[in-house]
Length: 136
Image 1 (cartoon, one colour):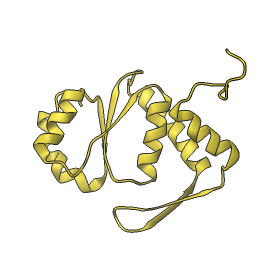
Image 2 (cartoon, rainbow, N blue to C red):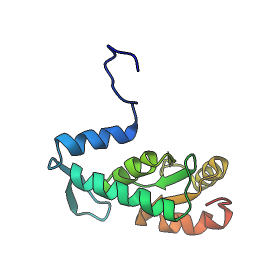
Image 3 (cartoon, helix red, strand yellow):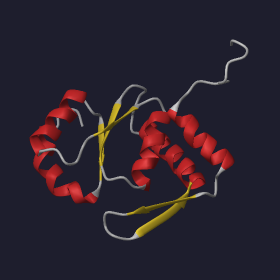
Image 4 (cartoon, one colour):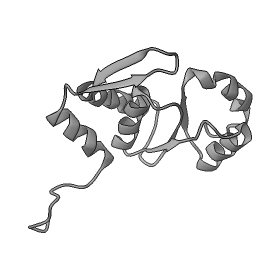
């Protein structure tokens, strides 16, 4: 390591949640769920649950470099996946839910996504395109 540099460790996405958990574990994160209610949690909660998500993905056979897709709105569950997937060395592949179904299908197939996480509002869409998702 070179002395005098500002950073003493690699700049990783997982270091963001580690920092938040170390220095602001009780800071509140507020999001509105797509179903309507307000959800409250802390950086400590997000850190713990992102590690749980990473462990679950390992059990499912996800390897570093695998693509894990999300078709989801911006909420605490998506944030947990953001840190959990990237923290284990896999790639979080966020798919824009405002695209047309054939575009979503093409993008997921082209990326060779291994797993697709989605919010419940996308069940009808995924029921239509699931048979054509080759690697999910």
